[in-house]
Length: 144
Image 1 (cartoon, rainbow, N blue to C red):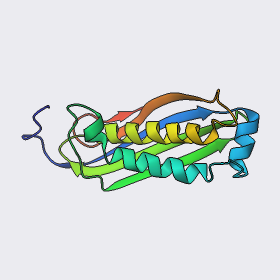
Image 2 (image 1 turned 90 degrees about the vertical axis):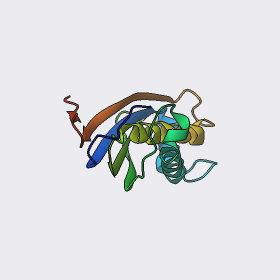
Image 3 (image 1 turned 120 degrees about the horizontal axis):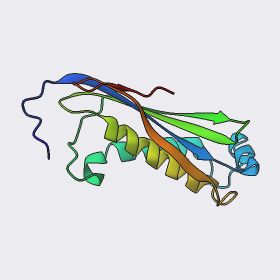
């Protein structure tokens, strides 16, 4: 692990997004809550939260951080039959929280796929990327 002992504690935040691409049928079933497994958004959100809290167990050499805030949101886009997932993490720590946001978005996307795969086994997860991070010495903001 990297020695962060000399780093200053600061408020750190990260935002990560991913996109789940669905068939028109799967998108419609998701939107009308007609999936056999139940409420896909709630299941995906809980999966993402649980995973983010275990990031240090999943990623070797990653520091365990006490998350102060984790929010996962879903933005359905009917024109493209996609769902954009956004995971936002926040902690007051000596190192960044972007890995927790990545893990939350990735696992929430996987859980959403699991919920729709009976209707659309060809659904895809794409564009997992850091949108922004603040705190510490290296801020980042993706420009599109």
